[in-house]
Image 1 (cartoon, rainbow, N blue to C red):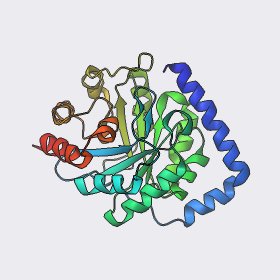
Image 2: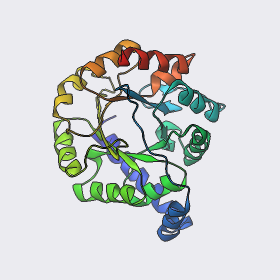
Image 3: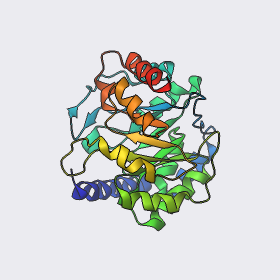
Length: 274
């Protein structure tokens, strides 16, 4: 994976968006989003640390994580019971074997628990934010380095209009500088609408670089939750990122591979909160 990978993913995402618009024009999709039940907010616990658990059937770095027979509803309900603050759902089909149907299924399964689903994809158009909202999502992830500032602002504005939260994903100092500009004006809230995360996976080698979390953490915007992405696979890792000043961790591959994902999630939360 490299910068070319992100470019290729953006092109595929744009093609998917245009295909979706031909089937359901933007105005109709926006109406569907607005007519959907109110999105569930992201509510951090009073304990000082939370986990966004992830549903991801495949990873470009690790290959297949689960087969097509995976019981998605059961898995995400286990996440909720174990204390996840939200569930991130990969909807990108070519590299991650995701689809919007997984997001819809997850949102329905989480509704009784009051926990939001978040669409994780290579979003390039506000249409896809409305698409996520219509599928039941309470939030979306936005990759900072993929788009120009005006395009990022358009995605954020659509999320705000639809009552959704956004997780801005940064890889380096330049991304964080953009994040600082974008979150200016967003105030600290019991139910945050903007989060900023550091993904510590190297885009060229695919290897996780854990020290990137410690190095970039102090540069993140003040007043918004800080999310550690990638590199959190154990209770010790959760303690490490909490000590580095992160309020949350997004955990995907470790939970997807775990024999008892709910037990691993509980262990991570208990250790970090202690």
